[in-house]
Length: 269
Image (cartoon, rainbow, N blue to C red; front, side):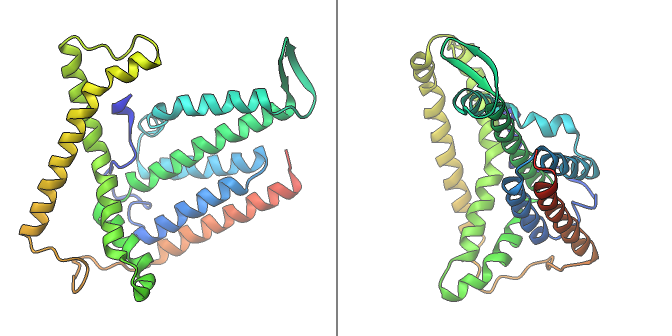
């Protein structure tokens, strides 16, 4: 499961989405998250899913790799689906057995919640898969720069967020190596009840945290050796500039938002 974590990884490419300004991609991702929550019907979800699917195909990222990132949260998706299915008691009764009653309203709500979680994860993955950590840092800092006038540490916050995203796949890879080493020594992570499994994770978490602190210390020393002193007076080799493709992307997301709102009004199912 650890190797299935894809958020934070970068897939190099030269597609239309890769060449977008990172600020455009950040704002588009926020807009997609908003439109996922705005949608109240299957018609709207179908439009969003088609938009995300076409965007993913245009990036060159294999869909199998993209949807592999859903495996770590599959338990949450299934649990949310079952919870809404059993406790949402509206609409007609589809199935009733003892105290279990499944209704049309429960099935609809469960499907909505599962679809929202899937679309949110896939949209977030597209951002990190098509944006390098350096570009993501520059984009975040540029968007938060107006708040720096009132003392907000825009550069430092952007740097911390990008480093956190960058180290997700690194820590996952290290956790996978530690788990394999522990299994070779007889550790068992897959059997027993939930308490036994939690106890079995202790030999995995301790070296993982030690390794994470060691990497953080090495990174701090490397940044200090290169005279890093924050964002004051820093220059960039690649300056961020909006182009025609960014306008096209913004219009596409705005059109999707308008279509979803129209679908909510005229196709509320």
